[in-house]
Image (cartoon, rainbow, N blue to C red; front, side, top):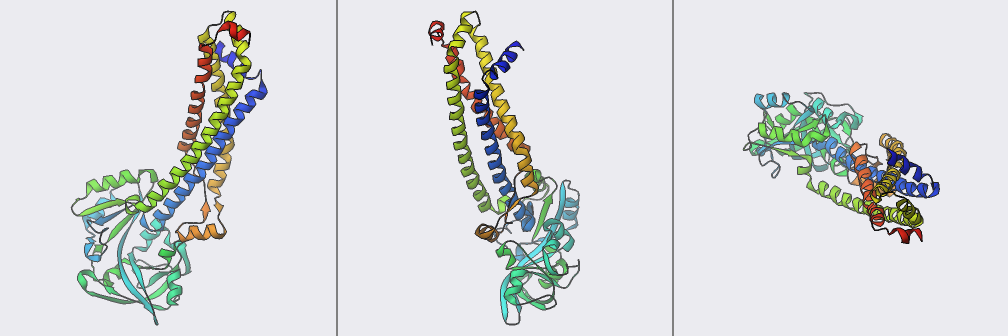
Length: 406
């Protein structure tokens, strides 16, 4: 306790030096937290857009469906499968789908589309499809109508109340043709999705494609996003691996994962440069402090203070400085990070357009996770611990007479 009191008092003997060192640490942790919060927040938004726009956190398919997405590679919606899914805890919901490519037409306009046969309530629970409505009304569970995406509606020059014609190939090569009154129009941020999606009820899709009791996928939403990989593994173990495959969103979209990793690596490089600058700044301040106090150290050792005890005092001083800067930096960053977590910065102009073209919301949110607060604080503390080597080695090699004459 006496060593700690001496170290604390020594800090405030030269307030200017203490404030300069603590401020450099403060800005290091503050900038690191703000920078990393926006970076991780953009990744979370990207994943959230992907998961809640269409894919879910993980999906169940028949074995081989993902490599060859045709109706013949679908699977039966059996009572056993339904019972297995209902018994699973941790799910926020799941959406069964029957998906197939077809040709949609209205008047003289035609376009290739992805027809999605869905349970309207389950799909809304997974992707908030009802909130994407811009015109008309939502589907009923046994609806004979269709929802179409906004860009597709513009291309076909079709509106609510008009009749959409769908022609394609059904199960085992049978002809598939049907007419569907347009109930509503939905909008997706992704231009790719917004130009090709058609939603009809699951019974209507099975009737159109002559595929009774067939599904092509089941998409899952989870209560705790951190646990989706574990839950996918559990489902994988419960089902026959020769019949079914369970894939997480990152397995289905490896290009997005690579994009996030590459961007994260560049962000970490920037943080590394920031930490190097701060580390040299702290090192320089420490060197200046040691030169100023060399005579003081010599006098203390001359009057009987052990070198080991003096080292302990110096280490305590540096730790106090580090903790002072870290605590102040975190305290200053937390309100700002939380504000932008709740109120993301809206993007405008060309940046917003490019973000929308990639299929993501034009927003810049921050991440609100304890893990990266701890990680950045630990990195700064590690830098400070490395800087401690200098005063410890200087005191250990100190020659009393030379120090007194300094």
